[in-house]
Amino acid sequence: MAVNAQPLKSPAPDAPRQDPHGLENATRKKIQAENAKNFVSLQEIVAAAHRNLSRSVWDMLSGGSDSEMTLRRNRHALDSLALRQRVMVNVTNIDTTTSLLGQKMPIPVFIAPIGNYLQLADPEGALPVARAAAAKGMPAFISTAAKPGIDLIAQSVPDRMIFQLYIRSDRAWVADILDRAKALGYRALCVTVDRAYYSRRERDMINRLAVREGGTNTHQSSLTWDDVVWMKQHMGLPLILKGIATAEDAKLAVEHGADVVYVSNHGGRQLDQAQASIEVLPEVVAAVDGRAEVLMDGGICRGTDIVKAVALGARAVGVGKLYGWALAAAGQAGVERMIELLEAEIRSTLGLMGVTSLAQLNPSWVRPGQPVLAHGPGITSPFPVFEEHQRG
Image (cartoon, rainbow, N blue to C red):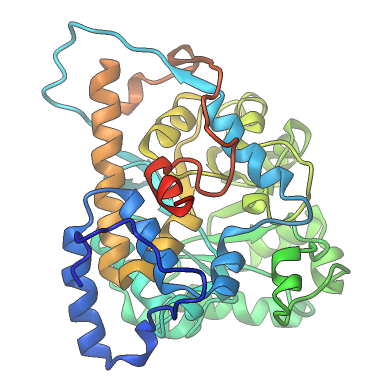
């Protein structure tokens, strides 16, 4: 069935899911490419992912920790900002470009690390994601946990990726993997700093997946500022600290050599009842005060979300769940189509706001706004047509 035939219809609860892993590689990619061409909206991508994924894998990607309040706040806070609109401006030409660590980007979007999920959505794991990012001139953060491993991913992608580190052993182990990543051509080091404890991701626990139910990772939980200083000195590449959530830590990050301060709450998958990333962003930008670049992720699902984050000071914005859904929907072709649709949404948003360049954006372009949601903020609330079809 073509994707554009009843594109948002999902199977009944007991119906078997499609199995993209059961097809030969070439056949699967051909089907994915044809399907991706037919997606006219991000909503169709989400619907296709919902059809293709089992309930437990959907939950692994889409859920958060404990009560999932942080996940929902990410979405609610984005929807609580309204965009201002100016008219009678010549918006024939719009510049959506930016840069990260000196590398030009066509839109202010990068691929955030989401680790173990990728190989469950696609038999090639992170490879199609990295290839899609490279094809679109977009940076991709490749996780320590990503399969088929940082070596094969780097060898298969013509552009440099950013290495995202989870600490799994002592300094000797860290030194070895940093040396490997540098030799492979990764152009920066991203250290995730908000995972001192494993969170309780209750969707995974209820689905009886093999997950850690809270508790510490000894090496990750003992991480200090001195450790990240040593890592930067050892690797000799730009340092990105991911998981900064306060002005206090943003200042410390810069003081300890961070080239990029990355605002993130792990997509609502670590500390429950935390602030939303977009709420934290302005205080972090003020604390950094131009001494480092600022990135953000957390609930980003639409072009309007990206424009809001850039207006509040983010150099670029990471997508996670969104490209995870795109990968499940149509593999590499699905991720590339997601990027194209995001660019179309960003360009349309800027044009309707009367803005001709990202450089014109600043906090004056956003105001508090009352969210108008039929069923409250949630995982898929940015996609109302999809939600309507799910409710019958």
